[in-house]
Length: 267
Image (cartoon, rainbow, N blue to C red; front, side, top):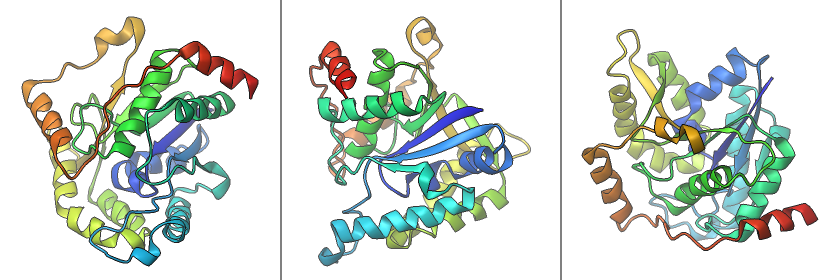
């Protein structure tokens, strides 16, 4: 059995970006995989275009938690397979304390494969997404855990792996996204561009209309296998990091790897 953990910054991320692959692994090949979902936040402040301040905070966090449970049922994933780090929405930092928590979590579950938000070559630079991806990259790159898994990024504009699907898959994606009722305004605004993005991602497939793009990240002696970004990819990614609507926190703190190991060992 292959152990796979899907990391997300917010409760609706996987439905938007990974629903087809997640469905394939958890439903069509459920006898071969053990799936866990790890959500860094509960999405406490994610009310797009709404000024309903009374809902934000713990109340919205509870609502979005139940929306996630409802969506994951479509993959056959139960509540005991979903974990929360309970970091406040918008507060996922590249910090020693969060890195240590993720190390403990990975040492507990020992996944073979991890999926996480793209940290570098991406169109979506919300700091929660970027830092989630950077934390996992850092932990694996520095060998801070007992078992080193394979790392794949979603929301990647430099993919080296794609999971194709058809129009029926788009309908399934819309169905699971619809479970996140609180995010309807955001989902409605992104429906057309996201569909176009998946269609463009499948342009080299003759038998498939759409595809979810992913980037496999290689480390150490295999790092030469990493796809080199074109000038266009560099331009798009850097432009998105500069947009005022996002807060991609790219500052790397000075981390003492040995201290992290000692802190994890004490726990």
